[in-house]
Image (tube, rainbow over all chains, first blue to last red; front, side, top):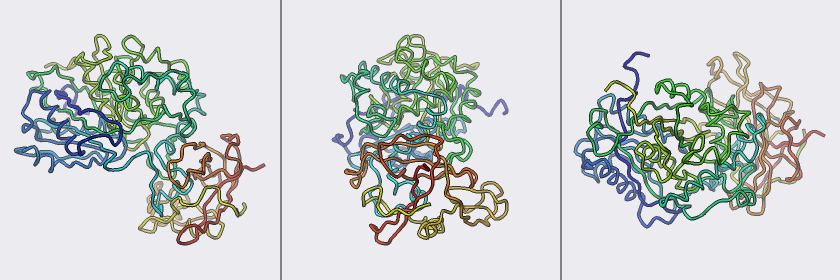
Length: 396
Length: 150
């Protein structure tokens, strides 16, 4: 890699915006309006006119396409119109990475990364497809009642737990941390709804080994953030959240159908983690606070192992509420409440929280944060991750 | 290998079909005959599953389907309690197993583990294929299910 082939320190996230987060189906506004509102809030937060945004990047087949958004907002010159392929939250950091690439390549000045969801208007993720015929790859799963994301991923987690002796208590700690942190966050849908170990243990089984509280919410709302160059970021309204690195991709044949990924008990981060740390010039020991995408708790378990926070056979000791609780746990985790307890905004809310931690504005602020990390979309293909920092980390 | 007369899951789930471009048709046709087949490359003899139009090992397009023994090993499993489909409202719990086939390059297939849905499931346990003929779709089809080898 040449000196030039890096994004380290060349861009920053300079604005964040979020609508009210609603339970699924409860948004009074149409999805497109939520997205427009989030983009306007992000521009306001950044201190720019929304018409200065010239690039748009989204993921997970977001229904609100850049030409329509740009037209609605009166964008003067649309320079970048981008979709990160793949489903789930795998593109939460990847869309940010694409935005960074557009800025570093000189395509765009300000790129907005956005995600809007109104599941009441457009149907739910957690329901099985109600169709008479399952063609192709779906034929190998759906007729056997292997239909939903929870069912698809439980199979991988079960194998991981078998291989390394991971216990239910490790999954529970992840859920407990999200709910703990949501109690300080008025934006969180689960604000005011504490979770105890007893409640977790007694909650109904969705699909073994997942209890109800191992599964993310389904919500309505929208989130948006703005990426720009280091040159611009230095003199803007907010303290920049410098991007040290971002990575995206997928390990060998991870998308093999009928559950045939050769390395099966994985979150799919084994090839990305070294690239992410390598470009950033930091290691897991440098990470001050982590936002790790929880579609299901087991995905966090494998993601954290694959990012080097503990060995796979140490998870029962490392995965405790004490270790994950802000402000002084060993590794504060999902400090806004995340997908489980703040809002399932397909993990873009996790990037927002990583920015707030860098700014010192989290409702569960960790003291003296420098390195603030995000992992997006475990177990899907492709996945992505992101390291932000308070220090730009390069000669300015 | 055995034939099932009673269906494991209730009627109303999607029935299997090849992809719109025809990929996988040979597998479902073989299942109707109560034969388990796996895609195999005629050039390098490597197995692959699910099916694809190219061999991922040698990039040959000359692929066929080979009949295998139907003996497998449980690689992972899950017991489903929450019905995510209206057809399953009276159908939970049920067990889905992921089975490795040692005589087909350890490819994996998902299916239901027949018998008591509350039974203990053992990773590494031996299973054999069981063909479940179904008549609840617009045309008959056969599911590839699994049963513990006693």
